[in-house]
Length: 199
Ligand SMILES: [Zn+2]
Image (cartoon, rainbow, N blue to C red; front, side, top):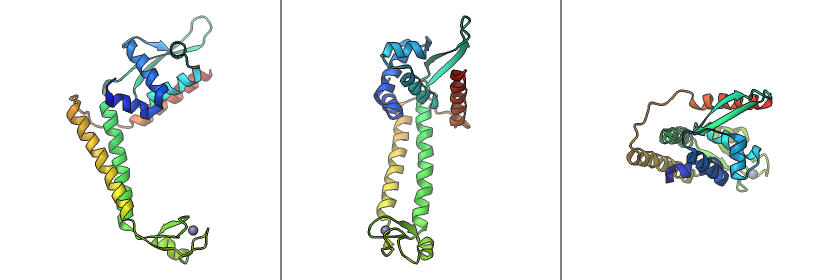
């Protein structure tokens, strides 16, 4: 795993997930069951599965399911799917950037009011509805300068945009067009997986 991928996997599931991903990477194209992977790592089966599902959420692993001929149990075989992870990262950043931009617009479009104790922060319309009184501490709602929140959001947007530029320039693989409903496909797979485990 390169540094960028390590950082990503760490973000997804911390140390255990890194260990798991490294073990899967060692296997390359070879598949492994969740059971065997857990044994290799010295982790219990639930921890192993939980982390495999986390990686599956980001399409960083693939799986194949089959039924044991002898006892009829469902067995899952996993393998790594690290190729193209840069696109997943870029898409994740783009989604966050969109969210932050929406928040930024909302921050800019409104005047904000807050009590001194900090329990309530609302926009002007809401503050008038409340007669400029905090429902919790009953303190007065005063105009609150939101320059800092605007700057925080701008900083986050810029950092994510820079990260995407860095990924694009250091990782030469072509960036594919945004795959539609990638997340929902992954979660459907996860549901199927969980259903399979239950029977
Ligand atoms: Zn208050």
